[in-house]
Length: 479
Ligand SMILES: [Zn+2]
Image (cartoon, rainbow, N blue to C red):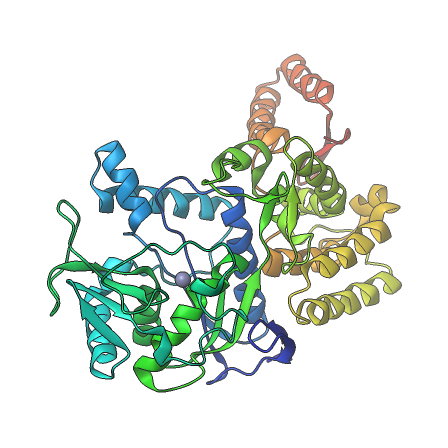
């Protein structure tokens, strides 16, 4: 297993990663509250943690990656009431839409998406433990966590209670003993989905869902917890309080990782602010590679500014430049197969390729510095830029050697995946059909027809080369 360092939000320092039971790694990332379509701000966090899971797997760790689904909460209930839809059905519809978008984005590292409502038995049992241990109290059919009982509250965020935040408005709830206490079981409201409990029918509060899930899946302590920066307070503080006062064990999480937010117009992209760009719209317009490149070409802990009309077109141009040699190599190998004959790779380049892959691993293992890794890949693209015309002379083995840094980028960053979209995708589908028609024409002696097909392809920038092994084709004009 490779040595990995991680910036841990709790200690506010970069620490060497040491899992509790190596090589196993438990990773929990706070997932979506699916009450509406996902936007590109959500996806930034999830693409980053996809890279964390991919990279750790590459380095020999066995990652179990969990992303919860908060499939019942106030926002879902409000939306369902407004649309006259069943709240759980509405949440599942948006969750499945998110899964499809995540697939398109190449997020395939999540092993399990637990739904909060599938864990109500665990949640009720945990609340009972908290009540028994004096950390929580029932009042008017709800159950509240007593913040004063957990002095360590605030260690992660540096904030003590919501009540101390300047300008924070806490609803006056006469059922609470103290204004900073938070609800972990909500008494039933007519018309809402409810579950039975010792305190009467109701539903879980948000914070306790995640701890009931991780206690069940990972036990009282686990390795990595991720999420957006905006979840540190109060959500992650509450998770720590709930889990540690349930089990008596500490710390709940060994490494807390928080991703920066996506800003639009200087503000966090959020539905409540109304400044959203939907993920599916971005995928339709720019494709998954451009989006992943946009997210990963920035440090994950910093904010990322998104400007409509410039950010993604710029990312598209930069990614096209970065991936050009990878595209060329892939086209040659796809056309001729990996055993294509040709010249060996120049020795200096072979050594550089090997060194670069090692440097890429080292760089990414330093707190997942995706931007620095991409900078190294740009260096490789520059190295190959002057040799693009001669790539066609190289053997399959030689091309594979030159492709190795891009293969690394595919495995860890999820970049350089050839998604059949746009003109290149269309041609890759059409040209073999045209070539087969041309073969049939020649077989029956209709050389005029064969030439017409050849000329039509030539007019579109595709040249053909007839050889002993069949006809090869190549783009002679760049996209
Ligand atoms: Zn959470």
